[in-house]
Length: 75
Image (tube, rainbow, N blue to C red):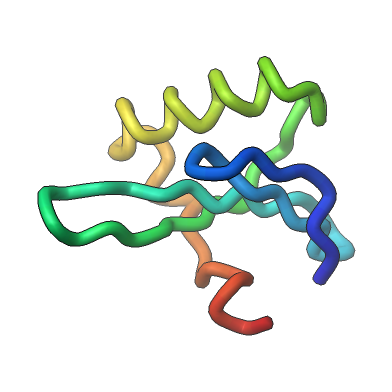
C-alpha cells in the first residue's frame, strides 16, 4: 500500500488500490493511537486533508462506519 499524502501529526493517506484510506492520530491524555477510515476523498490538497482530518476527529460518530484497520500496522 502506497502513501500518497502525509502531514506529520495530522494525517497519512494511503492508496489501497480500490480507494483511499486516511489514518489520523487521536490523542487521549497519555495515550495516542491512530484510526483509519476508507473514504472517497475529493482532493489530495493539504488544506482539504487537514480539514477532513479535523472533521473526522471532531465528529468520529459520523465516520466510524468507515473505519478500517490502520495500514501502518500492516507495513
